[in-house]
Image (tube, rainbow, N blue to C red; front, side, top):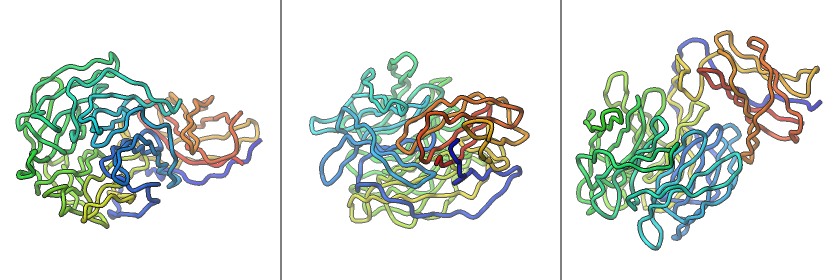
Length: 400
């Protein structure tokens, strides 16, 4: 039997807690890039496309948030920058963007299990410099370049079809930030085509009623900010005003759903625009790459911790509970995950290698003890994800 050493387990607390906010410098990207897009699936933040050394690329990099390591994955079929990338249903969707031929309407789906890309139905409106969000199995996109793209378009993942919805009231917005919260799509800030107007608006789309409304005005108008959702908050990080968002900001704000107000988050160590903010299942947010105060592409990876330990794990990437413990089980070629007493029925166990290969593991649950088989796995570092009806338990282990 392989010896199993516990490298890291998610520290999951059984009662509400609050720690200090913090930023930590992590391993840089393999290249300096701007105009890229990012999204997270399980242990990995994926960064697709962008501009490297003045040229567009079709690369895909994967960052393991538990091991602080970068790896290269299969490239997209399309070279693109200033596009949109979103994760839904365990897959990535790269939409639109810009190439030397102009704005794109190309949609590609990435399957991390097979490390392959598949072309999907094209977006009706070719555009770049836009944003969107995934809500309940559908992807919403609006804004962009080069025309008056107030049009909102909905992509149904299950049927691979596009539908036009109610337009964004302001229209012509570029480089706004998009995120989903409470079953709605939030579109924040942005600029006009001429770089003469910068917006502090919070526009909210309700898919149920196909209507837009306004939320509270942001403290500062900005565009090219990293935007993501975590723990009932939408974070809006960095960005700026002026041509190419220079000068740019290192201050960060968030919209708190509990109070419906904007609050200030801890400033990032460096000013940047066009950076990608992505919430990950280790209870952290990653602000990656972008452009510095001089407009130069950077390879920075910064990790943000809000200090929040969530009080409920329903629909959250990390659940609060006691520590997940892994240890060798001498009766099996595998290991045991000890779950908290509050755990529900286990529905799946996944094991993911450093290269992103995902295995659906055989397991047997005995109350809160889950025996997981490792037959056929080579020595190495793996991320283990145990899912029950409400929670996700994440830990990292080493097989030797």
